[in-house]
Amino acid sequence: MHSIFERDHPGTADKATIDAFAEAIVALDDSVPTGTYVDMCSKLPLVDPAKITVPTIVMRGQWDGIAGIDDLIEFFKRLPNPDKQFAVMAGISHASFHQKNYLMVYHILHSFFSQPEPVYRG
Image (spheres, helix red, strand yellow):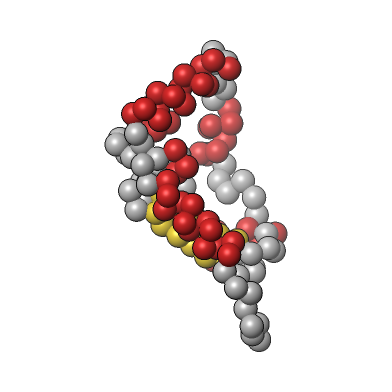
């Protein structure tokens, strides 16, 4: 469990958060299947971006080791809805909501969901 937070870039998450997360997970189960983790890393993208027709935000931590920046940009380019944003979050790896810079994550999400509707769409 600790490796989830240390794998991409040590230091991005608070030790107390890591310990609390690991303790809570271990209380629920004593093993973690590798299948979904392997699939997550080896079969990307899991969805066809051309089929995502709703407004979309892609958020990636600076040190996220799951999807490379070039792969994500290609995914982003294939999203058909022009209402889309791509954000790279400094000082963050994969588990963005559990890291020291989590307030940045909430800020980016809030900005995306509270933006005004376009007046002109062409």
